[in-house]
Length: 258
Image (cartoon, rainbow, N blue to C red; front, top):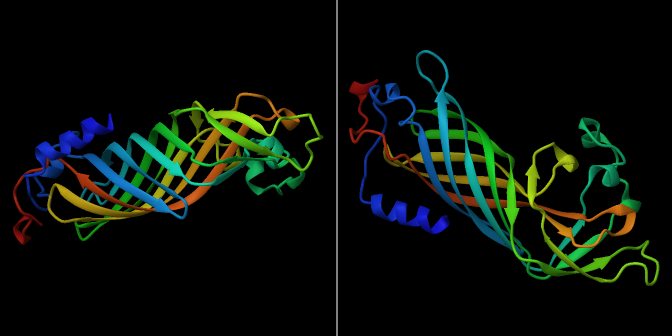
């Protein structure tokens, strides 16, 4: 899938255009389709995303505020990562919205260590953005639901409450298959959310900087202490992206379009 996206961008990379005219704003669905590739990095983590999104203009005149949705694939590679107990019923002692504000139950925390974790997630996501001066977009988005995949890894299980001989230190683990946004520790699986600023160089091409909050999760083959088999890593990652809108007009923006 990622290879197809790269080929698509190479085929259309020779098209250079500029800011949207009022005529463009009336084109509806085709006009507001965004295709994007990004790179992500943080200490001991790196990765990237490929996404498609569609935005709906709001308001009768300027239409600066947009609400959008789309699909995004996120791939994250790690080095020497510790994944901790994930379910809210263990980490917070409760589930539901109240878990976001509850104290951590540190006695319930266990860890699996992965030398080279790698998680791929494909999710539906929701986005909002606001446009300033026709060239700057400020916004945020969050994955809602989807699937994850990757290879099984050998994890090193650590627990201060693990009685000798009860649970083996070596545990096989794989990326949790189902992803669902439920807020905070209630979340299931691997999810990506971001705040971003985008600058339109031309009408069709833009660059974007982002701060991403990335959840990745592994499930152990065996059920371990407290009946748990899910372990999570969460990290902030900086991102740089290229955005392309293929169906905007090739008419450069000028004062006459205002």
